[in-house]
Image (spheres, one colour):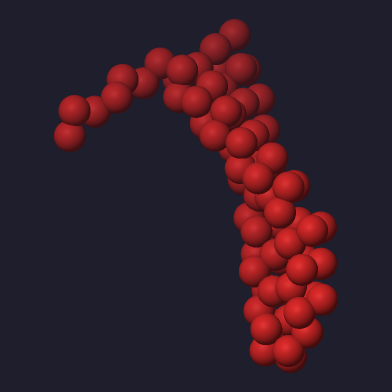
Length: 79
C-alpha cells in the first residue's frame, strides 16, 4: 500500500513541479521580452495571466512535497 501511495504522490509531485516551472519560466520570459522591447503592457499582461497560477502551482508542490516526505517516513536531518 505504501509503495503504491509513494508512486502516486511522486507522480503528482513531479507533474506539479513541471507545471510550476513552466508557468514561472513563461512569466519571466514574457516579462523579459516586454522589458527588452519596451512594451510595458506585455509585462503587466504576463503578470496578470501567470502570477496567480504560478503561486497556486508552487503551493501544490509544497503540499505534495510535505505529503511525499511523510509517506516515505523520512526523518528530518539535524545537519
